[in-house]
Length: 467
Image (cartoon, rainbow, N blue to C red; front, side, top):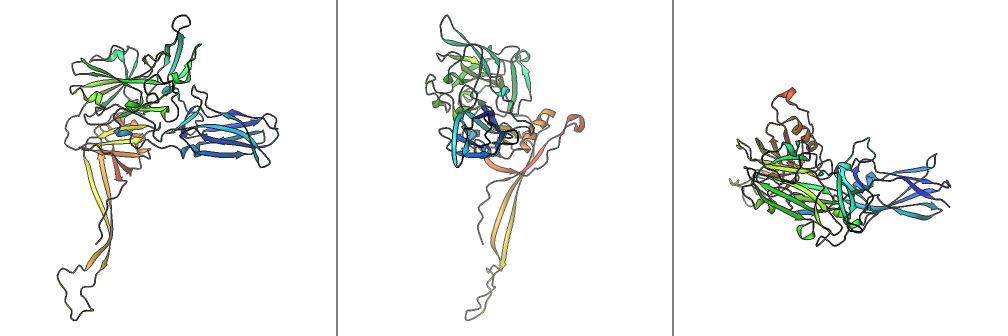
């Protein structure tokens, strides 16, 4: 009888595009055919069976990446959420069954799952470096420590050694609380990290966060005590006056979850592995303050097992509302699937051109009715007639002048397979195909003032009439 063990397994949170390695070993070395099954948890019905002969040293290595890629995609409506949203296609959660073949029979010896607090593996539609076996997830998952509050009391967060970042490539304008003098929350310490993002007053913008903790220390917490309790907004006017503090609690009524009330003891599993938030003025908590010039967003976690909230577990994000100058062209806002499987955004503010290319198939219609009693050629006869036609809608859009770091950030747009645009005056997002197939590095040192130009065509064609 074989004894199959997993010597390497995926991390509990991983990226689908890259290696996802499961390695099996038979400690009895009976040379059986190894068996593995990817078994989606409740809500993820996909199941895949794999088999592998041991290599010369007795190991069987499975790369699960290609199969996992078929189960994830970008959130298709995320741009227009109003408050919170769980994952909608961008997470696949599963467990692994391992064993061996004995004749034609499968012998399943054990079911294994991720080593995180919530017992499952989850994969996102992001991409790893080609040489990377394990995704470096730590910047995006907070680490928290617990202690007892009073002798034999409830467990409480005593320290947050590592705060989480949002799943965005836009960590390009980063400062600390000490440098900000035009209005900031009292909770923002001088050494805490702040990421600055500039938005137009009608732009959309979402941030997505992994709803997991790495729990360390001598006191561990229960599974259900692992995740986001709320995302809090602080709105300021141009004089630096605090206008409002607005927490959005991570409950079903606000689009989040899995809790209904905040004390339901439900583990944040499956689609609740990622929580996304509308962080623009299109979120009603921001739009209620018309004089807002800038605002801050921070994620908080359950601070005690009694479900008290208030402990910051993320870095800070500051949004500055700025419609720019010389707005002589209609803006085009672009959204794309970023390298981490969430969405990133940029607004193209300068000249844009719209072009429709039409391809027609024609035939020459008879100029008279040759089967009638006489021949005449009326002036309304068509002659050359359109038999069929198709059209392609194309756009060219230009950025304002960019900084070096903004140019690097836009590189991810050129690499993305999933791009959408929103035209000025509309709240609808349209899928497009980026036809700009080359990104060229530009810097102030080489190019002085520079812009980027993209071209794209609409993914959905124009319905055309026939002749």
